[in-house]
Length: 316
Length: 272
Image (cartoon, rainbow over all chains, first blue to last red; front, top):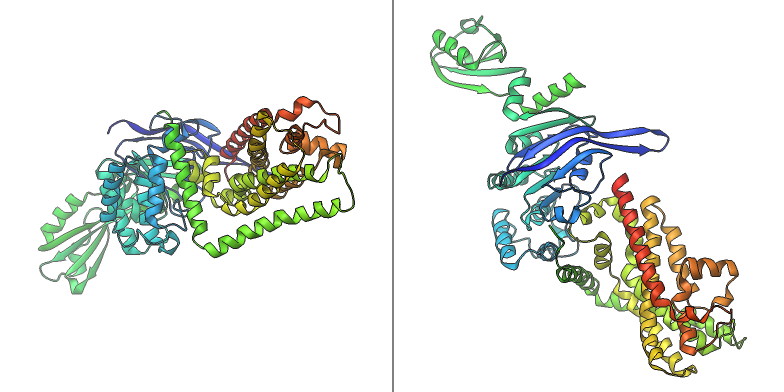
């Protein structure tokens, strides 16, 4: 699948409020997402993430700007779009509370008019990957949050949409459930489904998305590949050196670009923090190898949390 | 992409309704009690009518059986409408919880999904009482049977249900503007239940205009009853009106569809 899946231009959404000034929840967002991408759409509470998603899915009319999703106008062509779009809300269910999970899937099959053979195949696929077999005959209200989310994701994918939009899909899940869901979504994306993901859980983004769009106050702060953002916004990185023989701290002191040296394990491990903009990891490793016998090396990347914290700091 | 064939969409609505019905039948005892409750509620109003006729011989120009005829048609119509669109009363909850958003993410009409998935089978109780009263009145009242009248006797409750459903949809659309607009909506919807069951002449001119024509309650049972009886309108309204309920029903549906679309657009314009 090729082509543009999401295209917005100067998207604006203003909410009128009683006895308070108008609130510009989304204030000129231009976003292009191509088929097969996995984009993390992140920002603090009230940044305009959910409002953007509502405009992308046809629930909310934009105040200004244009929006096309799968080549369609989301509000005017809502039903046509709903056939090509899957949406998972972490905090609201699209399943039927009192019905067994299987019955919810059956209803969605009828609603989306999925051919029976395709339905059987897709359901079997999800049952296997998400381990749904023991849950199919339980009423949705009896499922745990993690179990229900597996059901929600399946429900959103039974009609094989080109684009899957996930709004906080891992909220409230335990670590095992989170990891299972992330693995499933990563495979789904690898198989060609475009993903747009909003989350507060940055490991979701790190695990799933190659591209990050950071919004705040209705504006896009940054939009780019995750790796590049890391490089640009990483403050300090850390080189961890395991030595062949213990060495005192001053042996590695004074190398170009190194801010500090920390000695651990009686001198057998040393941590050098350095700034990406003053030296490269390669140059530093070469300089270290000249002074000591190196048994092992590791470069620790800055956590995405730190990157984002710094972003908000700079723009806030 | 064009919309799916109508047949496939209808099948989807039928599935939704089927799921709702199965859920309600999951507790047969409680379901039976609810039906009986509905039947008794409808019959309770009937007692009031009969008591009244213990003291009077005619109500605004209508004899007992004639009022019962009206009462039967109105009862069935209201039961049907209440069963199919009555759960739109829950719209504020759908709006507040965001459940309406989930409906908008599916390739079906939001109104159709709301009605189908909340169909209230217990209203069968109300319909049953109405049906018994209607059949009794049809037998007892002095009707000169002609082919058009036979068709009318069968279709009048259905046409009335369409009119009342349209009224219901319009009234509940108010909830999109005023989230707690339910009280206002109920005064029109449940108010119609009372209004349509009695001769127009028992109400004041102001209420007649409002609930009989602005809200076209007079076309639910009053005019069809006059047509069945071949009776000139005691209020002197044109005879043409007596057979015009289907036209009014069609117009009401058009208006309701327009108002609902407008309301939904307003919702998409404001968010929840």
